[in-house]
Length: 132
Image (cartoon, rainbow, N blue to C red; front, side, top):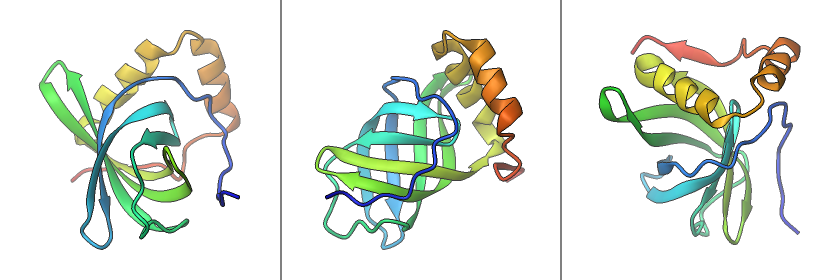
């Protein structure tokens, strides 16, 4: 049985985005998203045995933007792990390129009204956009 700590509040979109995942022990993992939302993603990769549910990590989305290829960083938590990948819950984001992420997310979303309704029901007050 797979363990998990999830509480989805936002619709997930089936977007393939390259990612680099940094674990607290220094391990770097590479994969791509199977789906993504404003509060998390499922990343296709082979999880190492050291993955722990609730473990803090940093996820970098590698996306094409008007500035070229950029990395959008999220301080995150491992929400669940399966043979084909891991679920990540976003805790906070680096503001440097968050507009690129939001633009990509909006362009991939065919139901903007639903997204706006979800945001009105579940505002992202805990989703900090740092100025670093």
